[in-house]
Amino acid sequence: MRSEERRELYGAWAERWPSDAAELLDGYSGAWWIGGSWAIDVATGRRREHGDLDIVIPRSELSLLRGWLGGKWQLWSTFQGALKPLLPHDSDVLPIGTTSIWLRHSAYGQWEYEVLLDPSDSESWRFRRDTAVTMPLEDALATVDGIRFAKPQIVLAYAAAEHADVAWLDEALPSLDAEARAWLAERLADDHPWRARLT
Image (tube, rainbow, N blue to C red; front, top):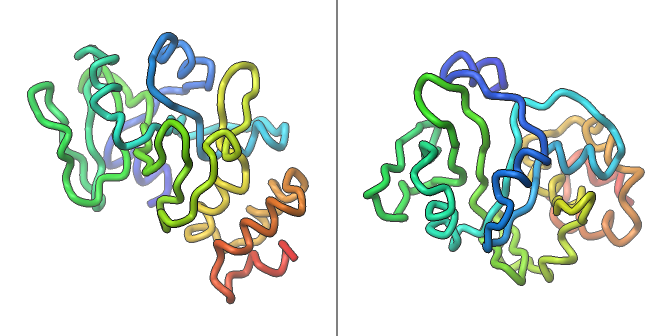
C-alpha cells in the first residue's frame, strides 16, 4: 500500500525525527534502534521527506516498552492489513501476523511512531525473514550522534522483497563495503534484480 493510500485509510502521520525518538526513549532500559529509510539516509548523508519514523525493538521487550510509555500513548497492533488497539489491560499476546505497533496519543491526533517488533534481543540481531541468520547486535547497527541505526545492508535485506527497482539500491550502494554487499547478496533470491549490482 502506498503512503498516500495508507494515510487516506488510517489517518495522517506527524513528522518525527530520530532526535524525537531519542527524547521519547531517554532513560529507557530496553534495546532500540532506528530502521527504514532514516537509517539509509544516515548512511548515505542524504536528507529527504519521510512518511514515518521506524523505531525497532526486540519483540520480547514489548512489555518493557509498554511499561515505559506508561499509558500516555495509544498502542495499535498492525497485522494482515488491519489495526487493533492494544488496551492497557491486554496481555502482550498479539494477533497472528503482527509485525509492528503504531503509537499515537488519541484518535484526535496523528500517528507519531511505528515500532517494529524484531526477533532480535539485546545482544544478537536476527533476520526476521530467516531467524537462522544472526550476527552480534552491535555489528548490525551504527551509532550516529548517540542514536543507533540499522546498517544499510540490514534495511535493504528487508526492503528487497518490496523494492525490485535497481534504482532504489543505487542510493545506498556506495555506502556498502565488499563484506556488506556479499552479505546482502546472500539474502537475495538467485533471480533478484539487485544481485547483479552487488557482485
